[in-house]
Image (cartoon, rainbow, N blue to C red):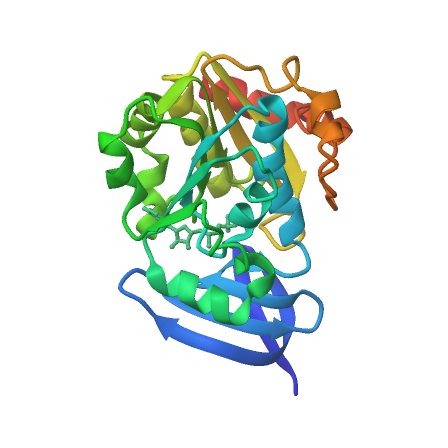
Length: 283
Ligand code: SAM
């Protein structure tokens, strides 16, 4: 068999993976959902033809979206997660005994059902009793929330289709309002490398800056995302992600991770000059 999955990473660049089996294809009210068994990356979830999660490299994304805010403020008790239908972010959060409640707001119930069936590696902890699943638009959900969450994680698709509203000023303003006085917002912040992605990331940065006194960006490398160079946004009312890092306290928890450690936490905020320039231009 010589089957390949191919995704456009830019109008001029394509990325391909060899497929052993097309395990699932379906269409929800919001998007096309596919699961592939690939030779190199294990099972892969795609939405509307974009890779969301692969079994081989998901640990990088999920470690870094979760443990960076948790090590900055280990007292986080109540978390809101928006998107995240594959369950990987929830899996990492449930490793903290100190977290009391996790509200997950995912627009598409079918993504969750498909991931529970085909990708238990990420979806296995969605039944944790602290996790409350809400199937609705995250943009609408946060409108009525005030001073409620210590941490909001936006684990969304890209800024088009159902995810578009999660990159707007309205959304970031409501996240600010929904957070407690020492609240932290971490979001999937697109890539700085290809022009279109970079414009999206600059827009997001500019909008978040309008609300939060502390607003920075950190980087990871994710082999299956466009260019492999990906960013997360860290915005906060009080905590600086580097000077307030509680490295000793986090290391004492003994959480075993494959990517995250407290050295890479600090290093991830050291940005290449071209990214610094893009951020400066956005300001
Ligand atoms: N790791 C991924 C990435 O960056 O490619 C994101 C993974 S997760 C599967 C993204 C989820 O966000 C999807 O399941 C999608 O249905 C959900 N989503 C998109 N727009 C949303 C919205 N407005 N409200 C809540 N969830 C949304």
